[in-house]
Amino acid sequence: MTVAVTGYATHVPGLSARDLPGSPAEPAVAADQAHVVLGRKGLLAKEPATRLALCAVHAALGLPPGRPTGPVAGAGTTAVVVSSNLGNVQTVCAVVDEMRASSGHAVSPLLAPNASSNIIASSIAIRYGITGPNFMLCAGATSGLDAVRLGARLLRAGRTDRAVVVGVEPDDEIARGLLGLRATPPGGFSEPRAAAACVLLTRYDPAAEGPAVLLDRVTRSARPPEGAAGLRLDPHPGLGGVSLTERVGETYGALGVLQVAAATGWLLDPASTHTAAEVTCGDPEDGYATARLSLTAASQDWLAPTAEVIFR
Image (cartoon, rainbow, N blue to C red; front, side, top):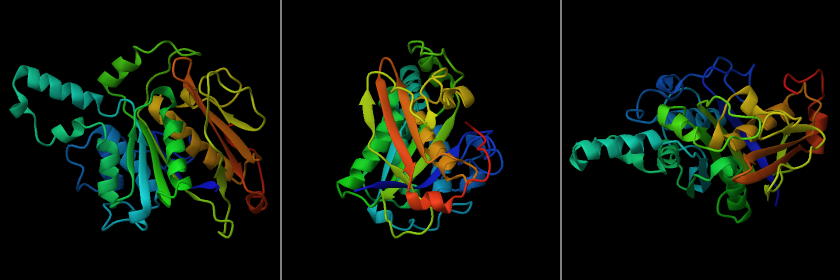
C-alpha cells in the first residue's frame, strides 16, 4: 500500500506563502490572534501551541475561517497524530507553581486540562469531531518524522482512512529555557520560533485526478544520510541542502512535519523542476529520521515546469 500526502499547511507567525510553502497568503497570525482563522468560540484558555496547531489543521482541511458547524467529512475514520516536545511545559510549570504557593484547589479548572501532554491532539479531535485513533508524541529531535511514520503505519494497518499529522512548538520563556539546555547542535543554536504544520495522509488512489505526492517509509539512522540528488531538506545548516532551521528558526518537535509540508509544497509548485525530495530531522543525541517524497509520473506531466522555484 502506498501513502500519499493529500493536504498540507504551515503556520509560522509572520510568514506568508511567499516565505514558506503551505503558509497563508498573508502573514500567519500569532497565537493570540488565532480567532481570525478559527473564530472566537472554544479558544478560551487554549495554549499558544494548541491554537497554532488548530490553525494549521484548519488550513490543511481547506476549511473557511470560523468554527466548524459539525464534524469534518470522514471524521469517524480519521486519526490525529501530533508531535510536540514543549507544547504545554509552560502550563505544567504554572500549575506546579500554583500548587506550591497554595494548593490544588487554587488551580483554575480552565488551566488544569492543559497540563495533560495530550491536550493538543485531543483539542484537535474535539474541535473537528474526529473519533479515530489519537496520539501525542514527545520524542525529541526526530519527533516530527516519528509522527509522520506513525500516521502512515495507521493507514497501512487499516486502522484509519486518513491521518491528520501535526507538528507544533511554542516559543515561550520555559520552552526557550529547556531548548537552551540541549547539547549544541551541529551548526550551532538557532533562535526558537513558534511554528505549526499539518499534513494529511491517505492511501494513494491512482484513479484520483490531479498531481499527487507519495510518501516512502520513514527510516532511522545514527547520522544524516549522505547528500541525495534533488530537493533535500536537512536537519542542520551547512549540509548542502535547505535548512528550515536556518531559514525559519528552531522548531524542534515540529520540524519533521514542517519539512514534509514544505517539501510537498515545493514539489507541487509548477515552477519547480524537482520530482523528489528527501527530508531529515534529528541530532547526534536522538539520532536521525529521514523520509522521501516523490511526484507520480502523471503528476510530472500535470505540472509543467515554467521557472525556477523560490527556495533551492
